[in-house]
Image 1 (tube, rainbow, N blue to C red):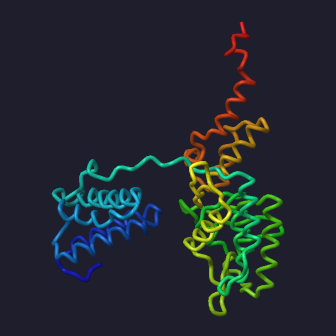
Image 2 (cartoon, one colour):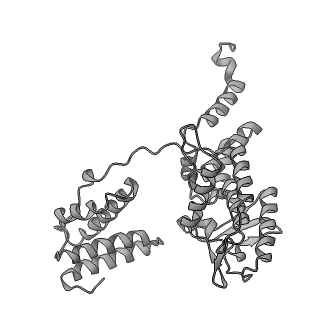
Image 3 (spheres, rainbow, N blue to C red):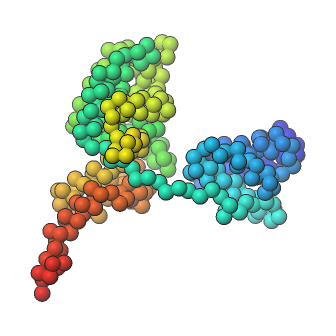
Length: 326
């Protein structure tokens, strides 16, 4: 970032800003990418520094991206400019009121048990291909772990053999979001699926060393981990082939499996008469959240949850509402 003289001061401020953020324990890799992209743009147009017109021109180049991505990029530059103003009070800082506005997020699609059964049946019928000789076993295990353990996409694709304790039915998730690691115990059926997959993986002759990826395809003579994009594409095709979707024709996203896991846990607690408020911290710990505030994002207004909560309220306080109490 120091190959053009006119922007050398900007480069120094970017380096100082990233260092200050990383000293607080954050990686700031996406933010660094944004600032590098901005720097390349300024160098390309021969600018001496950032100003309002150049900022508008730079962000117009990202109109094809999602609203949330564009807003994240604009906020990254804004925070950097505020940091810079500590020592350069007259430097440009964009107006937050001009930033792109987020659109309301659609409610997640809650995947039902019978839909998972269809996905697993379809995965079992997948034929091997040259680059993925155990494609059927990979997709079955991916569906099972996403639905029964609520893993994030990156957590699933980064799993290695060292992270697996099949005999105990436990996964180790290393340095995931918020730099947190955790142990994830599996259900009995998920553990059985994992053991079945490991046998298929061994028969196919994939690498057995500890750092080898769990979900793997063939690349030359070596095992190669499934990429997040590759896994997403395969699951989307599986959902389309089985017509798994909601009443509006939407197909489930990968994060919808995680939503379904959280909502499913909540429904089971309501049905079992458990103290939901006491159980929420356990769910937050299992899902790798910093606090239950993050977990609450997955438990927004969902019709099935509202129905169960209403049933519990009716059992406990129905007589008060109906006027049965003095």
